[in-house]
Length: 73
Image 1: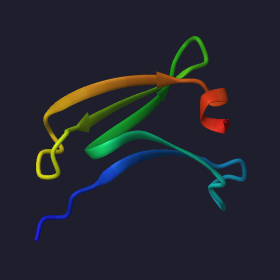
Image 2: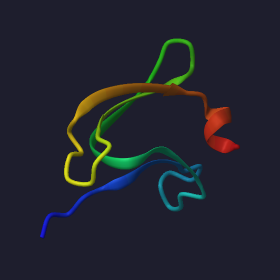
Image 3: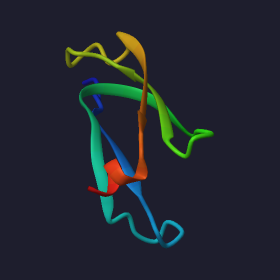
Image 4: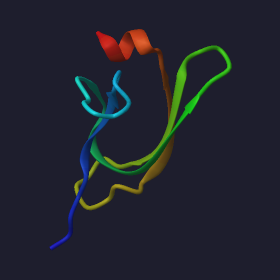
């Protein structure tokens, strides 16, 4: 049985990781490895593997950017 990760979600903690009250889904379908970085303009960048079919979470690499305002909505 293959474990497929879906609904790649970005979470925000405001207490050093004790709780994660804020979250938004970045990609609904299958996804794999991801990495976050703070960009020079204050936005957040996320590089992640994604797919469209359940058994293919590695179809392509995607770089998404978002603001903390988008995450906190």
